[in-house]
Length: 96
Image 1 (tube, one colour):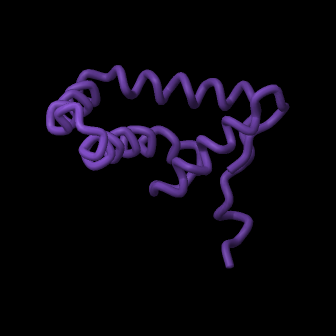
Image 2 (tube, rainbow, N blue to C red):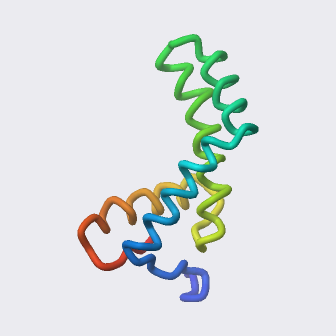
């Protein structure tokens, strides 16, 4: 059973905007842009290969940002972060 201390704090709508801006900025960073370009080149416009090559790189880039906000550094952390941001549209806070 996970303890309450292991749970990340809920994000306010403003904090969620900051996190999203940081994720977008992370994708724009030169080293990450190169990683994404290489993954897209490896995928060769094939949807199955996009899932194989591009999705993991994109997930890693997001993980690097969201871990600073208490979300776990795995696919589940990214999923919870996205779900929290999506569910917080128009609401006062966002949580994992």
